[in-house]
Image 1 (cartoon, one colour):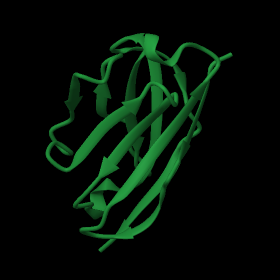
Image 2 (cartoon, helix red, strand yellow; image 1 turned 45 degrees about the horizontal axis):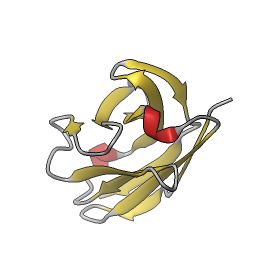
Image 3 (cartoon, helix red, strand yellow; image 1 turned 30 degrees about the vertical axis):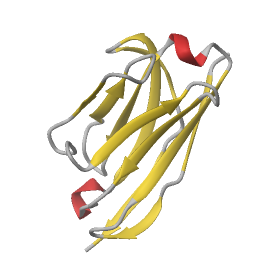
Image 4 (cartoon, one colour; image 1 turned 90 degrees about the vertical axis):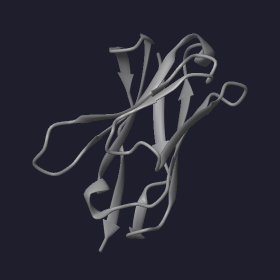
Length: 118
């Protein structure tokens, strides 16, 4: 059974940085595309970015482009989200997800809280 566990969230001041990690287990990590989503209080879950199986192709939401970077270490079954120049509007619970193709995600982590103070 696939399991995704996020870590690295916390409280940071605006302009600061955080690095989230998502540890995967239960299936061959490199066979699946990965993504990050987030959900702020009172809002729907929104797409943050995604990465190909090899890690060579990434795509980001306009709201985070140029500030966030997704990477993966297939040898360590881990997905990362480097977040720089954080803004208060980045405050949300961040979720990693996995699937056989983009948009066809079938596994989700429990989420990690990111809070950016102004």
